[in-house]
Length: 308
Image 1 (cartoon, rainbow, N blue to C red):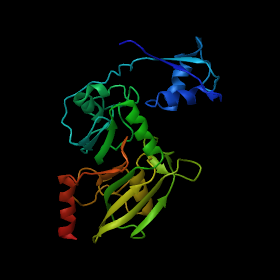
Image 2: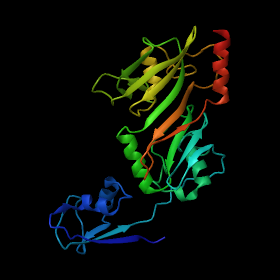
Image 3: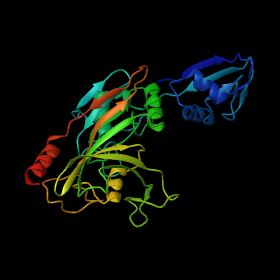
Image 4: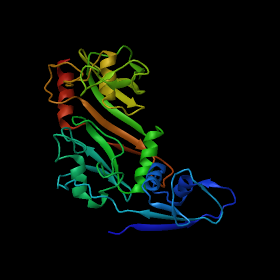
């Protein structure tokens, strides 16, 4: 596949930055992607390779952009069934099962959501980066529920902005041991690497980690457990699991941040990405997608209701 060549004629009376102008000409690319093309020598002005993204354009300048084809990722497409909740030309919304890793990493080179998505739609390879095609957010391996993937660069940039600007409403269901200090509330507790266990995350002192904010409310209260609805306003690694631990009510079945034995018949942590409300590209009203609790979590909840 050959490079794609785009040419533009700058005919404005007021000077403008090269990267800013090209974002308006190539809306399917983010500003960071444009700056990367400039840094790699793929952009020229009046026949001369541009040296910096902040180069100022003047009336009459001719700009050429050479866009290389996506680099083959080496990821293997696999025929793995997907529970697709929604799909259009821009994206797909998948109900991920517990136990499925989202993208290949050390120890998990196959059987991931990315492998399954490439098996379903090979054209998604290279969208948003060669290593994690189409991904704009993540779920832990043992967390089930909704995850959205972009099918083209324009949609990928749009979705990234929606998540970055906190315009996406995410709702999780969590069964916890005990109960939180208040029936509903807001947690503001920064998250960083655990200094004692580098493979774990931890609540850290302000200024030592990244901002992490969650809101929660109680849905049902039992003798020894509580069903909570969580709304993470930021997207930090293991955020809800750590915030539950911080509240003194760790998630049932969480062997990393919770109790080793909950007394319930569960082999994973009880956390499910239940609802996703998001504005899709070219639409004026947001869509709301839902995925009901999987059977194994329904069974645990019924067990709690019977005996508590």
